[in-house]
Every structure is written in structure tokens, then in C-alpha cells.
Image (cartoon, rainbow, N blue to C red):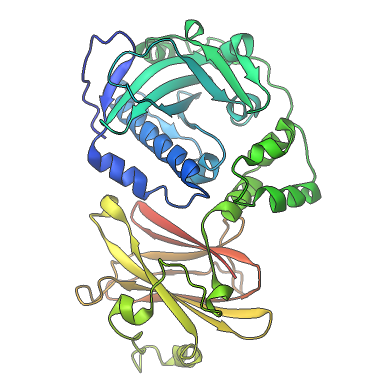
Length: 408
């Protein structure tokens, strides 16, 4: 993220430049969402978060940490905004797209999702308004306010669960926020936050079944705000609802030759059939590999994008129906393109997660995970599942990761 200030004397806010590389990377990282609108929301949030972190790194000595950094997609699917913590103060970053972001805006109002105000574990101390113009690569840090000011002055829209705060109630110089973080630590920034509504696990299951339907564009409008807040405040429930709505690969449909376009035949992806194991080193696994010779197989390219200089692997999934209910699945990761790369990068990790995002355990209680060594041609994992079960495959190398979602 290039944070070059384009104009130090603008009438309103701080202008920062967003590089094309930052835009491309943010777009690559926001694929798994239920609809284009939610992906766009996640894209703006990723850009604004990276931009604010870069701005703080240049202009503030304190260290900023991202709140729930590993769970951001499950937030952005449902709510606009992300949060960072500095000196025990939480700053909620609220982006929006703006066509004329290059110039000072006219009168505006800040829209704050109710979740960031009402959920005790989410509520911020400060709320930072950001406008983004992706067409010209400009981001404007506009203004900020406090949670207390929102409670005192904002107008609440019950239908959309939003608080609106007029420009006159905002602090229009974002640099004042940096001073407040240093010199106003004792300042009261939060109002009274009521105890959230409680819902039972049984009620939550019913809601997840209903609200996890990706055809519901605005699931929050299907329930009262208190119930919605309770669902989102629970990390496990929120993540499960996100996974139900995210783009999932349906493995049992493969058996009927209903295959998503992104999944290719193994021959097309690898340039030939899957290789046989080396006879000595892998002889104990040979029976398992023979078991998958008649399995239905598809694979796809997994691109880690610019964070890892374009490193790419291929994920091959083999599916074999053991009975009407039980499906045997093998997951293999190969270097890609296969002709150019013989070995996987060392320390490449493959982990299988359940629908709650927790590692799946084998019979001994050990997580189903594999990690490549210095000269591995592939790594693999196997699992059994029943029809309708959900799981995900988490692939990671260094600080970059990709997650693929499946339902049996």
C-alpha cells in the first residue's frame, strides 16, 4: 500500500494513494463470499484496513494489531467494518466507495453498523470513516467519532440496523485521533452497553439453517437485531453461518458429473494421470492409493498471489462412494506447473477443518494435517464423511493462506 499524501492542504481528510498491486492483492483475497455485493464489501474493507495500517506505521509510533485477523471474512460477509487495537483502544474502520474521492466531499453522514455499537465484545472506542475510489486508486481518511457520541447523537435506522451520524458531530481532522491515543487515554469514549440477548444452542441451530442460505442477500433483516447480535457475537456460530453461505464445492454432485467450472480433470491440470507412489518409500500407503484408482478426481490451481511472488500449487480431490452414506475422500497437493516444479516448497501446510473452523481429528485425537519437507513431490490427507457434512481445506505457506470449502 503506497501511502503517499497527494495533497497536504485538502479541505477535508487525508488522501492516500492505493497502488494497483494492493488492489489486485485485495481482490485475490476476497473470493469466498456468497454474492458479488458481499465480495465488494470485503474488498473495500481489505483495502481500507491495509491503508490505515500503513498510514499508522508512517505517522504513529504505537503498535497496531488487527482484531480477529483470522476471522475477517466471516465478519465481512455480514457486516461492513474491521477493527484494530492501539494502546488498549479499539478503532473501528468503516469504508465506503466514493466516486469523487479525489476532491473534498460535500456534506456527508457516517453510517455505523449496529453490531459495532451494540455488541459488547465488538464495540469500539473510536470509529474512523474512510472513502475509497478504486477507479483512480485514492483513499481518503475523512473523520472520526467515539462510541459515546454515536449513542448520544446518531439516528438509528431499525430496518437496516444502522446508526447515522451527521458531519457536524464528527471530528474532521484524523490527525487529532493520533493525539488522542497518546494524550487522552483516560477520556471516556464509550457509553453504556447493555447486556446482549441470549439464545440457546437449539435456537441457534435453527437460525443457522435458515440464515446460512446464500440466497438470502440480507440475512440480518430476517430476525430481530438482538438475536442477530447474539449470533454474530458467538465466533463459532458466525463462522458456521459464513461457511454455509460461502462458495462451496459439492463433492457428491461430482458423482453425477455436476462439476464446478474451476475444477479440471487431473490429466488437464497435471498434464497426465496422478503419479504412482515410489515403491519403497510409500509402500505402506500403496493399498490406499490403489483404492482411489477408480475414484472420481478433479483438481484446481491454487494461486497464492503476490504475497508469495506468484507461487502456485494444485489441489487434487479424489472422491469414492463407499456406501449410500459414507464417502472416502483423498486430498493431494502438488507443485504447479508440474513440469517446471518437481518439489513442493518446504513447510507447505495442508489442514482439514470442520464446519466450525476447528481441525478435524483422527482416531488418535491428532489433527488431520500434513506439512511438506525439503524434497516432497506431494503431500496428502484422507478422510471419511457422510452426506451433507461440511469441511474446509486450509493451505498455507509462510504468511499466506487459501481456504477451500466443501460439502459432501
